[in-house]
Image (cartoon, rainbow, N blue to C red; front, side):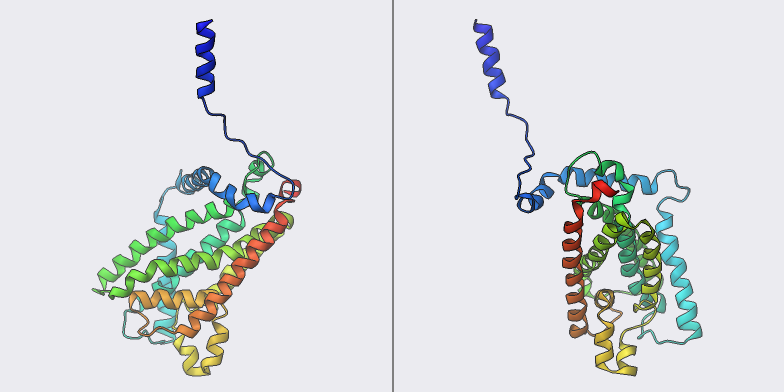
Length: 291
């Protein structure tokens, strides 16, 4: 009898396992709370994507350096040598990298997040979890590539004996803004990609088109100098315009800070983020059925 009582006490001392309760009419209230509860899944998916990205590759992380480096060379030849665009007194490769790095971070984050649901179709149809974890975790791969390219830019600065100003400490702020600018369109694209599989062909076109309509190979000051302030503000409706200008301001390429241009880009970025989250949440309940 004593043994039975002791076993009952041991059993009572063990806390019951955590339960996931899905209540009718309470989905929205519990959804954002579930994001925190599934933080381990977020970390696991992000780590898995990183391993898949670099596993069994010949050059490994070198691929993250080759693309921006070769693009930098092309832009330097076209915009500096051929077109003769000014660089504002700084080495032209640093001007190009100041626009290329945040743009490629945006493009990679958009591409990775837009394909995240289709790539994890088996996971979606088997278990419940907030689906927004998938595009969010896919962005981590883009952040790793971006960190590697920052080291490349630091090497280029050393090569040209260029010392960035103290305001470079604000660089993480504009990196975060680039993430916000990418996540909104990424959520819209990944939701559309579930229903319309040919939509995945639109993303590379948009990324390529956005590269040439963003101030990657030139400064936005040229637009204001040639066309005026209003066209520059309209141009800033591209959310990456303010991000690239701020990024260059942090590393000392842009001497002045254009607050109005940044404000327009910020409003556009956060409107797109709100639209992306809203559209994603409205279509999320049908993902498992049609994927």
